[in-house]
Length: 230
Image (cartoon, rainbow, N blue to C red; front, side, top):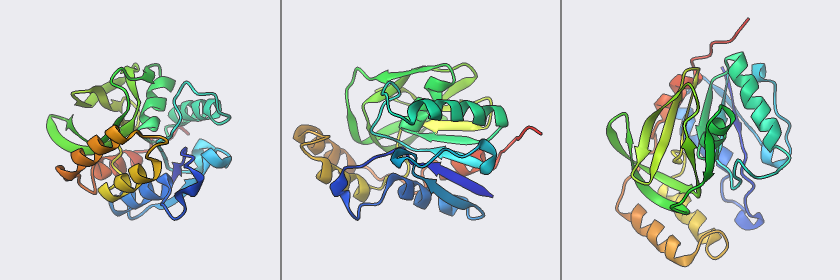
């Protein structure tokens, strides 16, 4: 079984030894998917998109970009997601990946009226409260046809989507640990995050424990559910 992570994050140059988003996703999903050979495709740095049939499933990462941004990989990503749906290739979307999937499949994502959210928040997933780490300024505001909301937060009504094809997506970051979030806030303080927001984020994380395997089994089940067309 071969799984590809589409890394769509282009971090600041001085992040150095800080793990990439693709690496964090691999560390998160690997224990739940031990049979898989996992590859990270660095789309944000110009690595080409594969053909949908090249892998058994795909994870679409977060990004500092929004669905409305004009970057060279945005339109190819839209086409790739549509091709994956047509081919029956399973997909899992995280943060920007959640927004991009919804936007591509007939919904809408845009800048949220609540502004940028960073830290730990409570989401209700299938009726159960779960803590999750978040870092985003955009949200899905229109649910695409064929999708249903299976997770939400008080500030984020469309927090998770399940589709009527092998795909699901979430607004939060299950792959980010408290240490990763804290280090990211420290590195980006004053550039991508203001001091007041940073303080609020750190306080929210200090009082909440987020499971390291949050949604990993659900993602693994989706990625195992290929229904390829002949």
